[in-house]
Image (cartoon, rainbow, N blue to C red; front, side):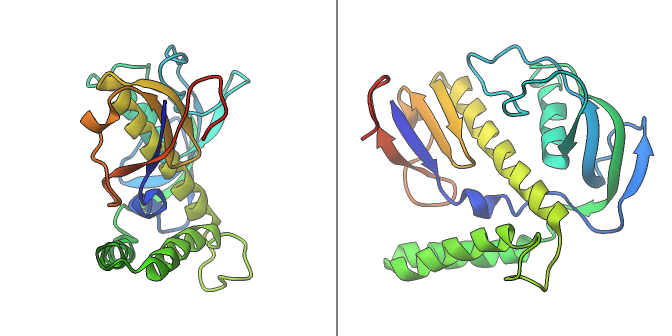
Length: 222
């Protein structure tokens, strides 16, 4: 079995739909792709527990639950005719505002370019600095004494949800291409069985993956 590390996962999530204005409360309305926020939904049944992770994560209790924009969009996509993996979620109420997907795009591209240059020149110090920069940016935009210029805890939760949605998409690609998906961990780690190099390019780039570990099921990781 191979544990794969998804490169730049924290960087890729900066491209997500983020609300701009003051959230407005609505009830019983269909999803508006021009807006983003949080939604109270009754999620669909998930019948692929043994082959694909539940898009909602580990869910123990039935009934309605609050989800963020990336999770709702993932469920809606999976319920579309293209995937047909579940029924559409039922939206009961929402707190949303107008949104933009490219709000942090310039910042994301600047960090990506700096990361690429550091890899090309073998500058490990700069590479680690860039990694820490975009990770700290997300983790401190909520309540933190280290970032008082930007207080958007809602963005923090949406970005973290986008990270899991991105990982789920990678997991589905692995499944669709015939790999056995053992587990998806955190926001940047897939454990698979099979010829993963035929599915994912290997390397250190943002669109590539690298080996984090190899092990035999039932034994300690190496």
